[in-house]
Image 1 (cartoon, rainbow, N blue to C red):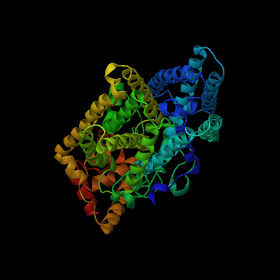
Image 2 (cartoon, one colour; image 1 turned 45 degrees about the horizontal axis):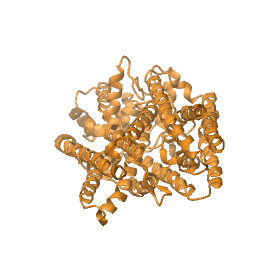
Image 3 (tube, rainbow, N blue to C red; image 1 turned 60 degrees about the horizontal axis):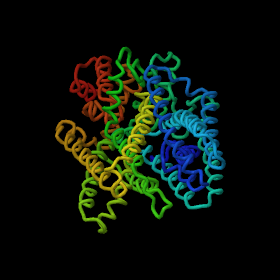
Image 4 (spheres, one colour; image 1 turned 90 degrees about the horizontal axis):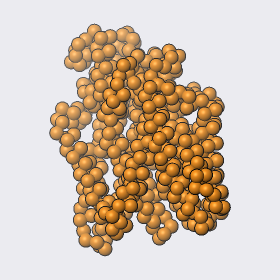
Length: 536
C-alpha cells in the first residue's frame, strides 16, 4: 500500500507531541481540577502561550523568508528548545501545586511557546517526507492518536494523567532532538527510496552551492510519483525528482527555493497563497472555533478532540481513494462542499430535534477533517520543496495562534454568550460553508482547468512507452529532476494549472520550469513538445 511506504516507527511519536502542543487549547484538559489553583494558572498560561507563539511564529516566518532560519536545525538550538518546552510545562505544574506569581506563569508559557514553535517546525520537517496521500493517512493516524490519548487522560485520575503527560512531553521532544544530533534533518534514503527527513531551512534564500546540492539529493530521493502526484499516470515514472528513472542531477536555480532572487515578500506569500489558500483558511477556521467555544461532553471530554478522531475516520479512507485527478482540488471542490451542504440542511432543523443534534456531532467531525487535511496539505507543500519548512510552519503557527486569540476575544462578546455561543458559531460556520461552495463553483467555471483535471491518463502500455521516451529526452537534454517530473506531465498534455495542483507547488513555478524545459528541448510550445516526444 502506497500510504505505508517509507514510514518510520519513530514518526508515530508525533501523536505524543500533538497531545502536548500548547497552542491547541483542549490539551489543557489534563490540568483542570488538579487543585484550586487550576483556574488561576491555566488560563494565563494558555493565553500567554498563544501570544508568545504568534510572536515567535511571525519572527521565524520573516527570518525564513529572508533566508536566515538555518540556525533552527542546529543541535544546540533544538536541545534548548526541548528544554524550554519541558521546563515551561514543569513550571505550570508547580503553579498548580503552590501559589506562584502570575508573572512566573507567563514566563513559563513564553518558554514553552518559544520551544514549541521550533519543535513544530522540526516535526514539520520530519513529516515533510510524505506526499499528499501519505500525509493525509499518517497525519490522520497520529493526530487521532494524540487526541484519543487526551480523551483518555481527561477521564483518569489527576496523578496518573500528569505522569502520563510528562511521558508524552519527553516522547514528543525526543525525536526532533535525536534527529538534529544525528546529523541534521537530512539522512540517507530509507526503504522505498525515501529520505529520512527533510531539512528545516535547507530551502531558504541564498543557500550555498553545497546546500543546494544537498537539497537536490533530498528531493531526488523523495516519495514515489503515486504519492507526490495523485494521478496514476506518474506511478510508472519512478521516484519524485527522478521522473526519468535515473540518479538525480543537482536542481536548477529556482528548484526548492523559498524566495526567488529579488522577489518581494508579498509576492512570496502570494505564491504560497495560490497553493494552499483554501486549506489554510480551513485551519484558521478550526482555530477560531476552538478559541471561541469549549464544549465538553459529559463535563469530561472536549468535543474538539472528539472531532479530530471523527475527522481522522473520514480522512484516512479518503487518502486511500484512487483518483485520476489531483486529490486536493477533488477534496475541496467536491467532497467538502457536499459535506457542507449536508450540514447546512441539518442545521436548518428546529432546536432539540435529532437532525440538529446530529449536525452538532457532524460539525465537529467536519472541522476535525478540515484541520487534518490542512496539516497534510502543509506536509505536501513542504515535501514539494518550493518553500522552506520554517517558512511554512512558522506562518502556520503564527496564524493559528492569532486566530485562536481572536476566537477567545470573540467568546467574551455578547453575541457569543447566548446559548454558549451556538447561534453565533452557526452563522460563522455557515459563512465558511458558503465560502467552500463558492470556491467550488468558481473552480467549476474555469473550464480549461476542469477539462485538464478530468483528462484521462494514457493506457498502461502507452504510459510505459511515454516514460521511456521522456527518459531519453531528459537524459539527452540535461533536464533537472524537477524538470523531468514536470516534463512527464507536459508530454501528456496537462496544463500548468493541473501540474501545480498535483505537485502542490505554485503555477508560476511550473511555468518557469516549463520555459526552461522548452529552451533545453529546443521547442517553443507544449504542442511542439508533445510532437517531439511522439516522433522519438
